[in-house]
Image (cartoon, rainbow, N blue to C red; front, side):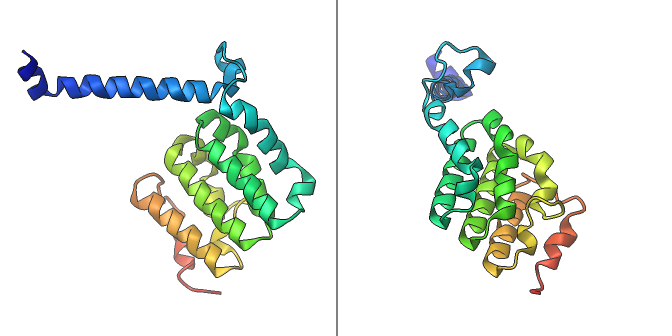
Amino acid sequence: EAELAAALGQGAVAEDTNLDNAREAAEAELLSHAAGVHGSRAAGKGLVAAYAPVVVALCGHPAVASGHALLRGAALAALSRLMAIDASFCEQHLQLLFTRLRGEPDKGTRAALMVALGDLAFRFPNAVEPWTEHLYGLRKWGNSLHDADAGVRQHAITVLAHLVLNDMMKVKGHIAEMARCLEDP
């Protein structure tokens, strides 16, 4: 009977289910920041609960936004990494990330934010989908395809091409914006 179950792959399915359950339990413990939403008893005891409010406050603070490029970059990198952990946290803070991308004077941070947004789109496509036009630079937040720096434009086209080629994002009518990047201004 065990040989038949193994031949049918039933043992592998059970192992996958156990691994999925263990992963979900670990994520639930890590993400207990959303306890008020999900009603968990472990309210505020997870890693995200400890650091997320500080990181969000830093990224939204005007002094940080106009401060040293290294501090801005580190704060935004921390925010994007926390966003990659949880879909609801990601959805809640996408506007902040796009706002900072729009006003970021440092080209290295703009390029890193574009890569981070690509990672978020790959991890949580449904959360990032409403912001697609911002990724393509068709709206006021996010204009990486038309950035003054060629390196940022290159990162943007690479990230978008990766998302399109992996069927994580549909091109729709946005192919013209990508095609415009083939010619440097």
